[in-house]
Image (cartoon, rainbow, N blue to C red; front, side, top):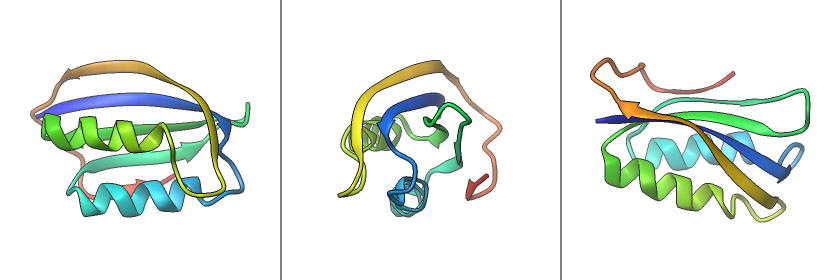
Length: 90
């Protein structure tokens, strides 16, 4: 299991980015959270199997239909043994 925290930059607020990310994370059985930041970006923490975490990071590069993602920064990536419960919008 791994834990990856990312920051998504671009037009990612007001376009259902958080709700879409939560839906995708639940589809992939991931734990973690997603939240808006004051600078207009979105941050997310994904925890689960490496393959599923990598898949959602690839999805985040595109996001929902109305999003325009400029870049994704990986803030941390580490092994994880203590998974959060569920995937929440903060």
